Length: 484
Image (cartoon, rainbow, N blue to C red; front, side, top):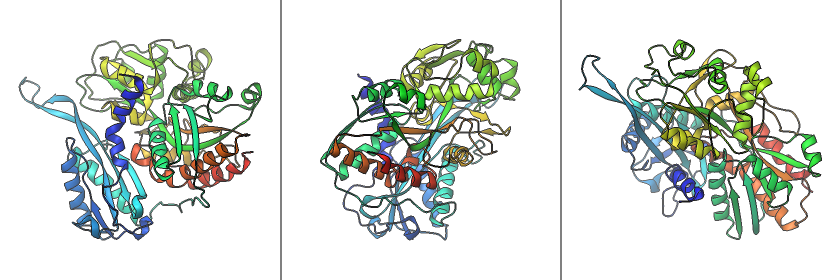
């Protein structure tokens, strides 16, 4: 099976969340603030999905913000989504008994609120809390309902960016680059093509470095990367590229260690030590000191890293260079780096698959790939000394203190200040030629970008990406005027 086919299959469960219920749309809400009557649709058939739906229904019935209805035709909007839980291991109930044990669960719940004409009004993805006291299905359902009701009430909800004028697009676009945002790009391009049947968009997730090379050689119309190009790099290419931020995402630490009863905490010292080869065993004192009570084996740590030119590696190495002087001087920052230890794998998908099948391994991927492969990912100690897990809220907090003025969006947000900020968060950019000779391609590309920076932003959270801050999205829209 080709990589593209495997990638498509791996996304299928998550992409289900992005489609509303089949059949004609009876809903009338055009904005989340108009939602008064809700219908909760199926959350899929995976383990835990029915129980999560039942729990959400019970919690929403008790709320004063919305009225739950039993017939979708009478609802202002639908809640549709995907929920899944899985077993990561077993823990003994009695240390002296070999026959009594209980499973350890992980999972996720992803949901969209769909209104008039099937338009997404809001979306979100939740993963288990650090201490899910009442069980994982209850925990995920409670988190989702809390976020949904807060959004309906307008709490922490900035005014949405409006697309403005729209032209019926017609034409073909080719793009290539980062695997980091590939899940959301695949979904965006599908939806845009549904609305514009005469448009065809292809995107090859070949890694940031290769995507940029193809853009410089004019083989594609746009490239995607988590590594912004410097002015010197663009001068060498004899052309300038507009860097448009699309969404925010997180690079997470994934691991495969049998017998763990809890998710692991990682400090900057642990991560730099492991990837420099200074920490070689899972039961190293440095790891044990940050994970009291964890059953850590006396086993070698198998490091997995990217072997292709990768924006994810750029973000990872940028973070390690900020928290480790030794990493900065001996390894440095780049889409490829001279790895001190470990084995290489191609693309985020490849790293996730390698960790999944390699006992006692560790690696780094974009958040959604950890979820797709049912892998544990750790909490990281941030610049404020707090252990923070990657989620939409912590990634948004990372961006809040790192906004850049004007229309140059090439800003790194790794290792930001703030107690709630996740330390390895990043913007992901689309790189667009400043000058586009083909007038029709320019029209199609402009309309696609307008849509992704407005309507598309409401869809990204269901796949684990954080939408752009409103002010950043507004300035990005203004940047489209600089395309010549």
